[in-house]
Image 1 (tube, rainbow, N blue to C red):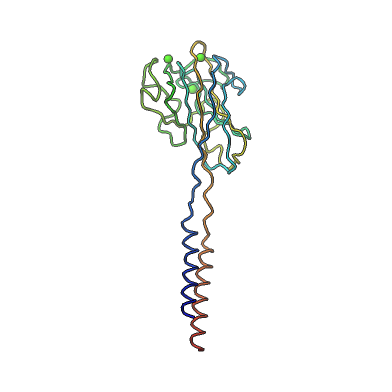
Image 2: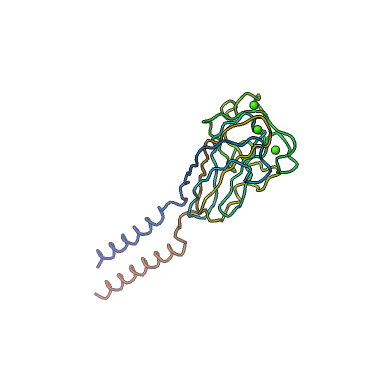
Length: 234
Ligand SMILES: [Ca+2]
Ligand SMILES: [Ca+2]
Ligand SMILES: [Ca+2]
């Protein structure tokens, strides 16, 4: 009887330990699009005037996400970056840095003259150390954001565009096609959108509740009690 009790307790304990060691966060899932020329001076605030790459979504509900961009261009202050969810929720990542656009319609002046170099991957996240509006503001117009200034991690700065930050996507289901888009609102300087990837963070894996452990403990105590009674009666 005692051996059976010990085996039962070991079994119950092993279930409990297995449940506790489950991962609590779904690993980010990187997705990638293709390559595209950015049309010069066409941006009017609509997606149809931007160069967009499609990025496959995730079947999970979104907790957070961040975006990697690779592009080449000779005038950062011409550019608007947006990420658009399958349900059309839109976050403006950057809006003509160095220029306080009165509206998100491509009109008015232009911003910082710095460049983007292919292969220097920019990351946009809520934890980005530099506001996207400050892109290139410490370097010359012929120097490269990220490659020259070493500043590659940016937080969203929507300016007059839609959205606040990546929290805008929290709670929506990620299934379907996402779009990452670049618009150009100033004549003369041009470039190419090389790639985009979205790192999706899903909900935490299910972790047994406190009541689960309480139930296991109660079962263990019950088995011990019954074993004690059987021993007393024998
Ligand atoms: Ca701006
Ligand atoms: Ca330039
Ligand atoms: Ca341009």
